[in-house]
Image 1: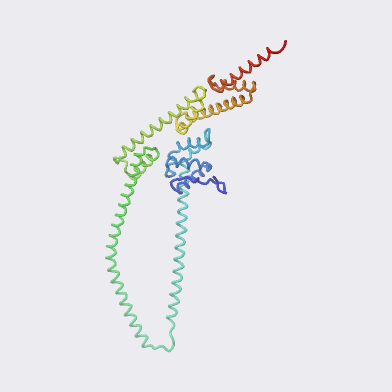
Image 2: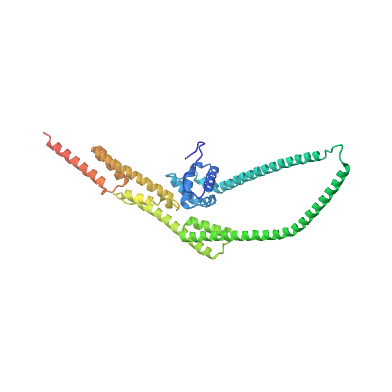
Length: 366
């Protein structure tokens, strides 16, 4: 799926968040592989990846999944994904930080601009008021002016004394409020740490109960990040992770053996079904040594087998001796069992044609 500019658009799958989808798409663009967006997002959703960092950590599992998504053969971007995944992740993080810094700078500039405009307006208003107050009529009552000036000075002195007393009282109150604010902040930090610890421990318990590779890996990493590597549950989590890894490796190797056995199976009526059942585990097989080659050989054998069966069916419908003989020869070259129903039927038909030809030859007048 692509937008008007030709860039891939995330498919409507229930991924963890829009931020995760956007970071994966940006990462693929850094790797010059935006066309792999659908496959990578689908793989991330199936494996339960919650961040771009998890996808990069498991890139060795992602590459075989992308090769399967490409239908057959090794994907052209496989080597680049293995070698440049970490570098592309760092570039994505750097760009995200630069974008955030630019946005903060823009907000700061806007705030300072508004503050300077407000100060300039206040200054203009104050200067206008002074000029207005300095305007004095020529016939003013000078004794009255002197009395009012003395009264104003006394009022200003009382106001300054009151402000000094308030500042002294606020100094003591400020120290008390500062201690209270510090205690409140420390309490909030402790509560936040306890909440985060509980959240990580709950995730670890769920991962241990689920027994899946990706959630266990993520839960163990989060426990180590907050300094709980020596927690009592970590030993069980690591042991569970090792067991799951061994089972996964065993399942992958068994899938490869199943594919190899299917290719070597007799080419009878059940051959196609046997190969299809073996190819159902192709995803696991590709993660083991020799798995990709085994999948390719099994797919090729199944494709040739279907072509041989189709040729026999078409030749039987045509009821032409030459076509049937050619189809039987192709089936023999592929190693088809003589007991295969289509091959046995074709040979019986050829024998019938041969008998009919001999009878017609004997019936001709000499």
